Length: 303
Image 1 (cartoon, rainbow, N blue to C red):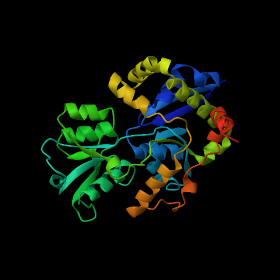
Image 2 (spheres, rainbow, N blue to C red; image 1 turned 90 degrees about the vertical axis):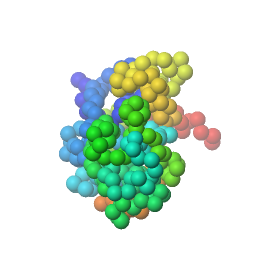
Image 3 (cartoon, rainbow, N blue to C red; image 1 turned 30 degrees about the vertical axis):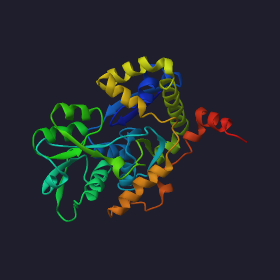
């Protein structure tokens, strides 16, 4: 009998796509279904309540929600690296100053890419606390682009593959987070710590199968098939699929320095997480450290 897992994501990473398609989860006795979330609030509240068991999300959502409604949420593996978070504006916007007094589209006003947007705007002389602009919670990227298309909002972070759709709609790219946050990390797998501790073997099997998918996706001879699998799973063109593949980390080991950057940003804006300023409260390496990949990495290290 298979263990059933529901994984809630914003985007399906290449490792997850491959692990499902090539039967790596099934080989470990896991049945893994994937659900795309409409927004971070639904995603993280559902994780807290047990509606799904694992999420792929921005680490800032872990910070914002761990302890918020009782459940302790922790990151357990790195899903992406080298991400770009481009800020797009409507065609009539000619400068950052043109955003003054305008409503801007975000997922939720106090988490993740909304804080990245605030930090980038601050670098260009615009402060939310001063009333220079307002943030409207519109949900995931597609909803943010729709809001901009309708003229309801005038800017937003539109990550791939929606950036291509923004270009096609006449939106203009003004910059991205690398200007001021070069170490901002990609997404993570996160769990409700209480559930994960009670289901440790299942979590380790999941990470092990996903890691197999990640490594298989990075083998050169598999490149064409991986691109096709991502394109079909995410309904995107091959160029966007190739970009998604490039975001795969070399392994699932957490980028702790990058995670600290996210925590520091939250504290900077007066949004210290419910469980305090200690990064160690918001992640665990204990599950990933039990995967075959981790032990292979350890064996490869010089003595």
